[in-house]
Image (cartoon, rainbow, N blue to C red; front, side, top):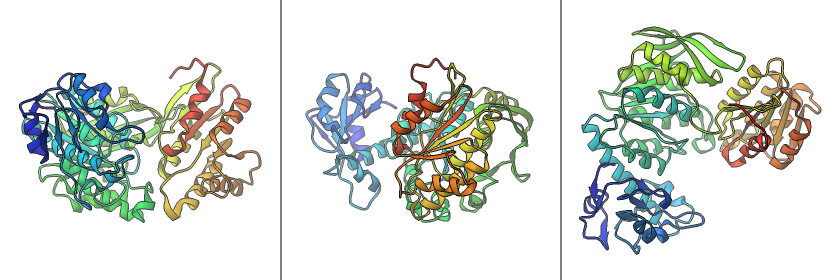
Length: 491
């Protein structure tokens, strides 16, 4: 972050000074975890489910922080954020665990204002903000974009999927005077959410990857999801660039909603930046010919799954816009690695069992992509799909889970293990598979992760391939981690 005094921060966020004369200068990082503060940093006091950051204010300053951004008075030099009127921006922040008095919402709103100020100042010095959204693939694409842009200049991107009201401004405030690229992913659980995030760190380049069924329970329909995802391209300036997936009709239709220049990507002949001759190796890693107006080059991805082709094309288009050559883009895509955990994390045990840990999250589209990757990687080997619920699907939940079960049969997956209780939507996955293939023991419904772990430990054979995937709430990474315990694996 750029250096600012507490008085300047108070002015930016519309707050007031507390136990400070305002001359104190913040020169370090902005952190909500007091353990990660650097000398001269700013501690962000947020209420949590078990602890309240306000209670650690004095400790944070004693550890070297200059001051605290707080929602109520604390025992330390601080900027007290103003209350957030009910119904205004950051309405979701009111749902913060432990935010009984609205102090968390006030702090998040102030953090967003501070990030907006810093990004605006840095943009005057040459910072380019890149935003990415979509129903699936945001994190993997963000990681690819960062790896392509880093050779062009200092680049900041969030760890994992830190893409909400807290992660977005926190990441933006990692940028400093030397930062050339700020890569952000934008999530949404309702209309207006992406517009709010885009206002915190206004993007000049925005990419929309796809419109799927994730959170359809909140939005009501895919068209409702598209309306919100398109808020990103609506936020772009006239001299900006909108990167849109030509293979997704709802995304391509967003071209009329932006002032920015549009670059289409995909496998469609109409795409400006496209992939031709896509093929997969035995580990489901894609190779293709990258075709652009600037030239052509061959790409061989290290990431597992054909769905990464679209992610790579979006990253390629952005890197080309920011000065890379086609040859540089192809070379960097071909060496790019997975950076975020639990996203098609492939590990092979010493006995030859391969674990595909894709347990971070799931929706119907990402589940289908993962199953196709499993089918491709397990050719000639026994395959297992260990799946659980896909959350926030609303009235489509039963049919969506049923469809995934049936797809597992059509892809000739050897064994389906569904984790969940009877008479719940996730059980439809097991029933769908049973009805589609008249399966018997090929599909099994178990009540919890412990039962799944016991089953797999008893029945796995050397050389088997196991996919583990579900929404975060299911915590299915416990299955993947248990299967890798006491095993020497190579990624």
